[in-house]
Image (cartoon, rainbow, N blue to C red; front, top):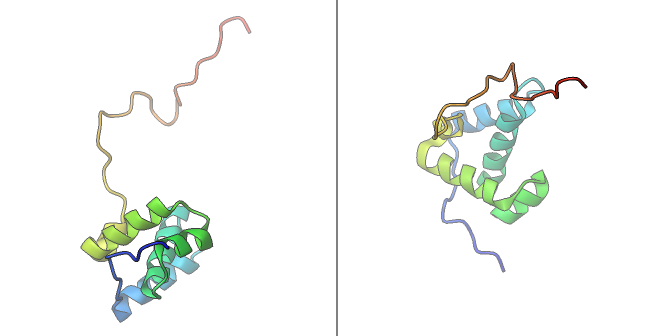
Length: 102
């Protein structure tokens, strides 16, 4: 039997309204909608594996966002700078190469 997450989510009225609005937006980035839904389901008391099944996403992803929300609240759901060296190719160039003469 899967264990319960130690990160219990209790939302304020403002947090719930903000997450509900994000979850309903058709124009919001998919990642933001999924993160909002993860937290809303967690606040309902669902386990990580149940949330993962409902949203068709890996349990580890649910666990990550649940923990980040627990520790940082709404600001934890925002994109954060990635580590490592900067990208070598710009998104416009994409880094693809064509064979000469083909």
